[in-house]
Amino acid sequence: MKYSFIKNGITSFVLLAAVFLSSCSMASSRIASDEGKVSTDSEGEAKTGSASTDFVSSAVDFNHELDQYKPKKDRYNFYFTYKTVHPWWDAVALGMEDAQRQYLERGITITYEYMAPDVASAEDQKKRLFAAKAGDFDVIGVDVADDAIISPILDEMVDSGIKVMTFSSSDAASGCKRIAYVGNTHNYEDGKDLTEALCKKLGYKGKVAILVGSVGAPCHEDRAKGAKATIAEYPDMEIVATEYDMDSVDLAYDLTMKILNDYPNLDGIICCNMSNPVGAARAITERGSNTVIVGMDHDQEALHYLKDGTIYCLGVQDCYSIGFDTIQTAVKIADGNKPGVLFQEKTDEATTVIYQDDASIMLDILYGDD
Image 1 (cartoon, helix red, strand yellow):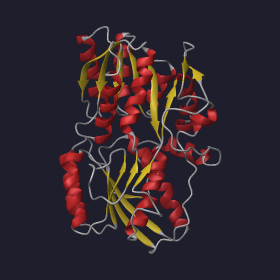
Image 2 (cartoon, rainbow, N blue to C red):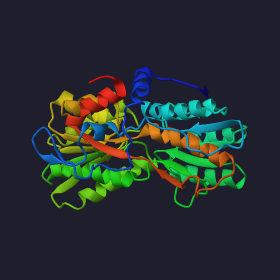
Image 3 (cartoon, rainbow, N blue to C red):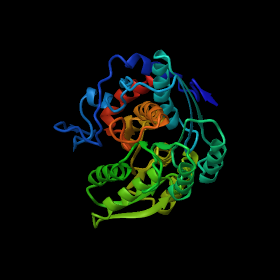
Image 4 (tube, helix red, strand yellow):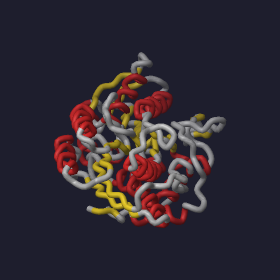
């Protein structure tokens, strides 16, 4: 579909964004810590990654303005495809829409298709890319479903003269010919940061499970690798199960139930996408388990589980900035520019780790719900 959009029930998020534009503070790219600030969790333990209201508020930065670059055309048409229909990408799309609106105010019309399957699939993404090749698009953008499968296709597209970028949470494989990437460049580090928080909470002792997400998705796989590397640092920590939930809350719930059946005294679960903290928390709550959950992102239900202590911490990505910067970068690529002065080959977006004391602030910022 062509976007000038709002979809999938996120109107409250949009309204809050509009109100918050005038008051939210700017955030530099940072991962899991606010230098010089320390707060405590519900048990009084010192913890980094959480601090003042301003710090938590800046995790998602709605305050964006186009830079002074003057586009060469007055009309652009883009194609973007991502892993799966999900609220995470709806949040990315909000940033895209804001950039689109600002360009229109300058007399420049941006149209784009923003398409994804209902279930993550590299094969589906291949078909969409082959179809997009035949379209009249200035730039094709891809949130890579599986870097091993998709990267060679992107290389072929670039070789044929198509302008290709990657965006969102998953870049292509190293060495891919795509022109630029806008999104999370530190998924491995995010996995390490969350797992380090879990290990500290458990006293560096215990059995843990990992819910990865989609098979082959670079962001999910890299977070899992970071988690495994961190666990390997502590001899009294053990990974007893690693499962793929394919970005499905229901499957994450089922897999967590299965893991709890196999390991009733499971100490922790590391969740590598936005869906699996919700599925894991539902299962943990139903079982009355004390298993500690760490995970990713800003799902409303997950934030409520963070607020009540079921989830220990969440790594919140700045989806809004990803969307805004993707459109702005796509315009420059469409004009024939290469990475360098005008835009980076990799535009890094922030992840902020938040804790129980931060949940109400984030719920209010994103959903008007505390």
